[in-house]
Image (cartoon, rainbow, N blue to C red; front, top):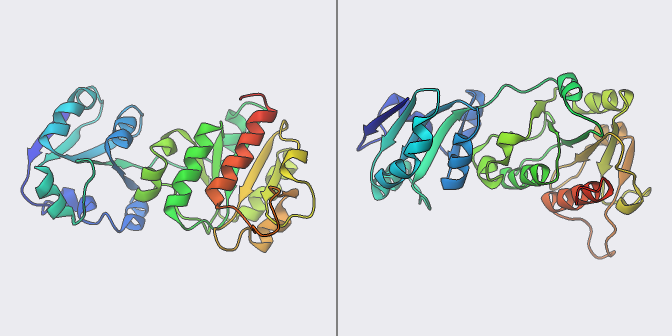
Length: 271
């Protein structure tokens, strides 16, 4: 059910998430996230995630009305002209539509293993802190058939506003599990027959093309500045590098993920 409210300020308590959009870590702690932009909001409205509210212009309300009115939950739509919205939230809106929705409950890793068909393909993240990189990496995961994302305890949330935006809504379709101790979870995956492959630019073992990805595997990507932590490095069954000239020390983590996942898809004849 759609409820429409025309507003001239963000003073209502229900609009607090829109007043604090630069504090998305607080949103994540409360179990909500902000979707920003037409494509991301449209993709959100096609999912089963619970949508709480919308902040938009009269024009965008009419464009989205058919999607909003068929939703099962009650959605509060707060409407104002675009220049007023920008003044209220404090930065430029390239498209006049924002939404708040509830973050889905994270899944247990054992549950992910049970529900995913073989050959399984997981990605684990260790220490990523840049939400834009994280969002692009999630989009790569969706593009290349990753079945689940394991988010390490030192990693930013993929539900931060900029991560959701840079994923272009791909996070809505990639199941996630939050780990308490990523190194221990990786060892458990190894014990269960899912080989853990650390993406490490200075690996002395196999290169990417020499590694077999047709089996169950979990590819592990590290932080933008420091790569994989020592504990996570030690937990990986093998370390694999993308061959590069000596004068280039590494790739951006989202670029490295695209290269790795393309090779997995190629070996599994998905592309």
